Amino acid sequence: MERESKKFYFLSLGCPKNDVDSELWINKLEEYNYKSVKHPDDADFLFVNTCAFIKDARLESTEAIQKLGEIRTKFPEKKLFILGCWPQREGKKLLHLFPQVDGIFGNSDLEQTIDAFKRFNGSRSKVVCVPDKFAVCNPTFHKPDTFPYAFLKIAEGCDNHCSYCILPKIRGPFRSLPESEILRRAKFLIEKNYKELILIAQDSTAYGKDLGNGYNIIRLLHKLDDIPGDFLIRVMYAHPKGVTPELIQTISDLPKIAKYLDIPFQHFDNEILQSMNRKYTSEDIEIILENLNSVKNRIVLRTTFIVGFPGEFEEHFEKLYDFISRGEFTHVGVFQYSLEEDTPAYSMPNQIPQDIASLRKEQLEMIQDEIILKRNKSMVGKVFRALIERQTIRKGFVIARMEEDAPQIDRIIKLKSKLKPGEWCNVRLVKALAHEFLGIEDRNYHT
Ligand code: SF4
Image (cartoon, rainbow, N blue to C red; front, side):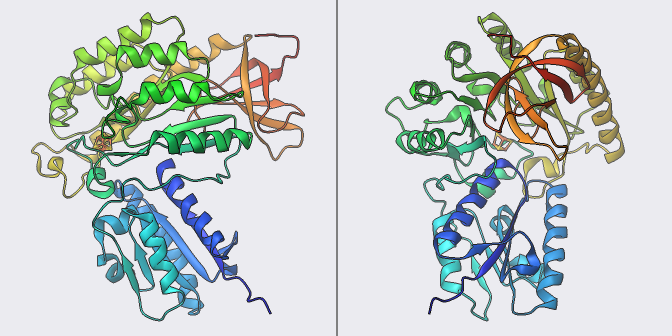
């Protein structure tokens, strides 16, 4: 008689890079005949893939672990595991913090940690597997549930050591996934009808630097663009150092590369950029913007800024405020500086009080909202090609997204349509808000 499969519940927190790792865990568990369930009450094994990037992320992870911990305590036959960035950062200390947890697994070498779980298989003793050696590059995944787009990890780790960031310690040094492997996975996803592949890494534009032999992001984009099919490739997390005139030209020229770039500039004041150890200046930022403005096809920009970094006095903040006010960016994420132990910024003088940082964040968000609302309104009446992403709860309505918007973080269009997720359509925008549009399908319009 066949043994009944054990059931697992998997909660993934944090960024798309973590989602990619979660996907690998889920695929492996299914391969080993465990069955995924949607509710923790129905599961034998409970997993939380944590984020430990900043304090707020750790708070979210804590809440999730405690909630699942209550279920674990109520039903002692269930087992609870925490994975990912937080175990990688804190090791077995987390077992003391969360005594209800049965095991912790780091993310430095996913194959090794998943094997350790398999060996655990219900044992009564607790398991800890946080390999201190980082794997060449954790593999990406094959079965994302975000159809019609998928995140494709191209590299792991980071060598930049920004003074506020703990990630190089958690994720290790920069390692590129072999180009052939990325292409194989991209082809697989395109054959499965995925319409948008989003290239992610801690530092995407550094792709290939550790591989030698001419491997780099530009060559990778050309190879991806050569794959037959009707799809888009989007580049996220482009460190400004890697945004060369050649890369900008490539993005402008290649038809399947989205005319979109996410370049986290983080600040615009040279003193702050220097103490952040970003290794570029506001003059370098101006050159990048000039290069972006000089290409034939307009490239829409997303960026992020950090406010309240140690030593950010009013005059530094004003420079950043004036820079954003120029309206160069369609999408801006503003983050309040988070004090992280084990980073150089932790012991820097002139730490900025939280209330000031929070006010600065609000000020930047307000000015950006004004800019984007004005821009969105100027788009009303025009027709844009959009990808249907999902149906809404309201019958007959769908969510679509333009090339100039990335999934999950940028604007959406709501429209009435019978089209299915993964289909392209032309949409005339009829109403604009700061973060979404209402539109109607325009079948008479041909791009
Ligand atoms: S580029 Fe800087 S902020 Fe980004 S992951 Fe690397 S060290 Fe962290």
